[in-house]
Each structure stands twice: as C-alpha cells, then as structure tokens.
Length: 348
Image 1 (spheres, rainbow, N blue to C red):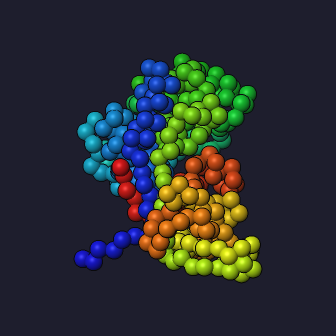
Image 2 (cartoon, one colour; image 1 turned 90 degrees about the horizontal axis):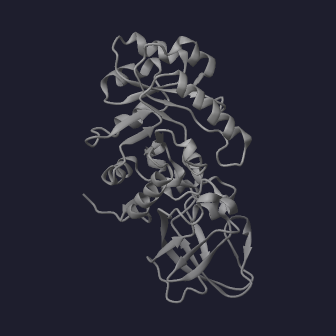
Image 3 (cartoon, rainbow, N blue to C red; image 1 turned 135 degrees about the vertical axis):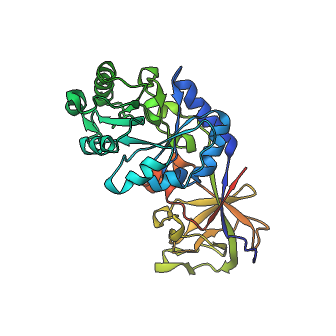
C-alpha cells in the first residue's frame, strides 16, 4: 500500500476536550454530564471523541441518526447511547437490534415503539418552546406516554445562548413535566443551558459545541480550551512584484514586492470564501494574512514576513471558533462540522 501524506491535517487536543467536559460537568453540580457526538463528533471523529470522554468518565452520548449509532458499535463498557431523531418506520430493525435508546419525538413514534411489543426503556423529547422535535406538552400530559419505560425525559432550550425570557419559561414548563411524567432522569440543558446555572441541569446535561472549544455564552469566556487546530502544507512559494495581482478576480494587488505561500486548502475542504479579507495563518510566530479569494482547493497567504518558510512546511490556520465565527459570519457549528475529509485527523 502506498503511504501518502495528506496535505491537510487537524491537530486535535484530547486534553482540551476532556478539560472542557470536566468544566461543563462541574457547572451542572450533581447532574451527570453527557456528550453530543452527532455529525461525526462535530467533525472531529465520533468514535475518537467517545473513546476520550468515556475514559474520562462520561457515560451518556447522543447522536442524530441510527446510521451514526451503528457506526459506533461496539460501545465501550458502561456507556449509553441515544438517537435524538427517534424512530421512523425504516429504523425499527436497527432500533430493536442495536443496544441504543431512541429519543421518541412524536405520538406517531411512541405508537411505533409500542407496536414493537417489548418494554425496553426509551427516551422521550417533549417540546417546551423550540417547536421542532418533541411531543407537545398537552400530548405528553394527556396519556400518550402512559406505560412507557422512560429512561430520560428531555426537552431542548431554544434561546439559551441569549438572555431571553424564554429560558425561564421553558425551565418552568419542564419543571412541571418532571412532576407529572415518571422517568428515571430528566434533561434540559445543552452547552449554553449549562451556563445558565444549576437550576437548568436537572439530572443530566447534554453539551455539544462547548466540548469542542466553542463559546456557548459569554459567561464561559476564558473557561473553555480550543480543541481543533487546522494546518495546511505549503504547496508553492512564489515572488510577486509590486502591482501584480493574486487569484481569481484579481482581488488582491501587491503594494510592494511580496512572497506568497500557496496552500492545499480551499472551500472543498470547508474553508469557505467568506474567510477572504480577514483569514490568516501563522508559521513560527509570524502572521501570514490570507490574500485574494479562497478557491476550491488553493488558498494564498502573504508570507513576506515569514523568513525561511519553505515548500512543504505547515501553516497553522487561524481558527479560534468564537473569533472566526464573528469575522466570517459562519456559526461555530458550521466552522467545525464543515471541515472536510481531506483533513487528516491527528489526536494528541
């Protein structure tokens, strides 16, 4: 087999991932702290994220679909996995075969689960204000859940990243559900919800973006560590004379004689055109501003101040999630999950 070195890599900090989980767990007081690892662990690799967090003590994990659940088999000992999108008709074989719980989201899904004929535990989502997935409150209180063995009753905060009156409204609604619907555990808070205080933690919290270095609320500033560090190899170095242009549309003109580093990086890798004008990289402490447009798999940086930078050297792409989100207009979620398969993922 030919050993080919990828031109892109993600340096992934397992220590930072675990430290973020432990900080989030501490904010929830006595509540257990789980982990959302949908979208392939927010782009980092769900199996690896599960391995590192399970070793640190995390026992509850959440994915979106049954295909994501199947890809994680076999589960580590003592770990529970739930599928947030519940069960469609086509999912029932997987739902009855895999050691995974569905999160039932509608009266139809509840009926489908009952029709399977056994009393296996399930999770249930009740909508308290998101108007997305989940039974309506009146459905949940009107007998739709009678007789179900509910492991975890969940709801999802719609505006926890903001100082919104909706947060307290959803907290009160979910508190009332806890008093009326029997379940072993109750779970409301996502990453931002954890930062709202211990009242939102109930029995189990479900952080996602904050695990991976995202900032869910300003309250968490300085507490969470960056986990993902994209790096791109220099494909070519070239000299550009004053007055010459670089890239499509001739959108950057050299004000003086310059040295340009061209990398194997572009929008096909999830590094989108919106980074032009403010993106950058570093090499040995030197800043290399992004110049011109981002193209499909090439991006150029001004390496005039980068000294002995050479072909084959690696640039660290500027990718602090909150900062890059503000500059690019992309959400922190998009910045993570959009990073493509051409990046080699390296845990350290």
